Length: 254
Ligand SMILES: Cc1cc2nc3c(=O)[nH]c(=O)nc-3n(C[C@H](O)[C@H](O)[C@H](O)COP(=O)(O)OP(=O)(O)OC[C@H]3O[C@@H](n4cnc5c(N)ncnc54)[C@H](O)[C@@H]3O)c2cc1C
Image (tube, rainbow, N blue to C red; front, side):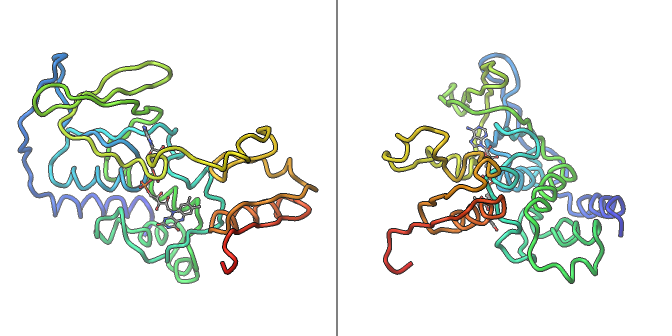
């Protein structure tokens, strides 16, 4: 089945499970006279898109997803995730919400064929990012990219005023409910030991920073920590021609 045939199939699937069929939420007017959103989701990664899709299916369709990143750059997949393939097995389901035609497998088979799926070991990282964008497009989840949430306050009974910034302009979105689907970015700030932070910026980087590995060719690189990202970065550095990599782990027995 081609991708366009799969998309037509998905449209039919969604039509058949379209219940409730009618909108059931009363519109709410915000203090500025505009209609408030029913749900604002901050973060357009896989969680934000899956939640948005779940709400659309429940006919909560006055919703918006915002993401500070550009379209396609949501989540870690095209920035600081540096492994070649996902670590999750290829047959995990997720943002498809258990609709077979929306699974990664259906997308992969439509794009590359069933033989390719059978031969596939793990999902290439960039395919996963492409798949997530496709899910968002075929399910019609409304996402505005380049919009960052900067604050939130109460705005009268049952409403929230969410401050956002877009291209340096600040504005307010009113909503009944707010969902934070901000992933690892939402956990605070990226941190490194103070002694490393004090080093000149060109001499150190956090794994979540953009890193010009080619500029490190021929040099010796120290990596602090022995988690999955440490080894992904070690491999990326060696592939880019770094002379040697030393990985440090504080536990005696890792
Ligand atoms: C190296 C690496 C490998 C991984 N491998 C796997 C794997 O194989 N399988 C797996 O299941 N998981 C893996 N993960 C975990 C992965 O991060 C999560 O599974 C997935 O990204 C979680 O999706 P999410 O939508 O919750 O968060 P994210 O994908 O992180 O999305 C959060 C979004 O919120 C946006 N955001 C944050 N703050 C704001 C704000 N204030 N305003 C607007 N937007 C904001 C961000 O721009 C981002 O796009 C890996 C993670 C890393 C770093």
